[in-house]
Image (cartoon, rainbow, N blue to C red; front, side, top):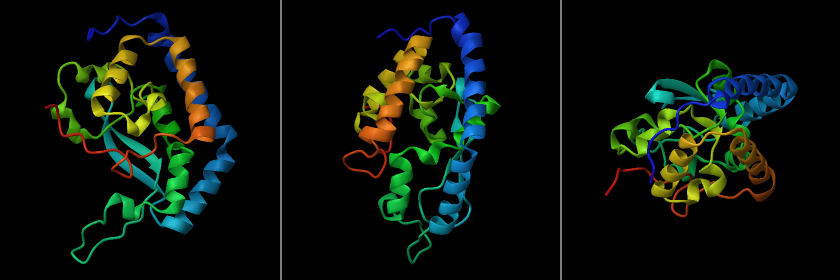
Length: 211
């Protein structure tokens, strides 16, 4: 596969960022009532803090703080260790993930320039040393609220396929592709609810590197 990043075009270099800011501001203003409702429900059902913050690698592997509404409890075992995700992920938390409402605070990351509306999903920092040269190209662009891999299986596709989708997008960023991904993401979040969990995990299996 071609792993050479296409030189930035006018859309990727200028227009995409402007659209990101407009979309993020519009979401925060138009849906401020929804943010407030979800925040209150999270506080009541899951406790504090309402927001989940975690470091993730962004464009050029620059680390930033990702913000989401929390979907899990802090339940621990007798040794003080957190219980498995599938135990701490409540019915309410599953609803937030199924509808992607947990990702609403990422509008803040988009405004800050950490993320884009569309791009490869930001994964865990500890995965960085595990990528091969080809997979590392997913960081040639800003990570996104939704991406090509998310609308093609999300957490049900293999890591290899996920990275292939990510790099394919990073190599060919276009307005038409972004519109297609946004539309598919809307259908997936509100109608299909597919790909939220893998077959063996509450979210996605751990990435352990390439065999």
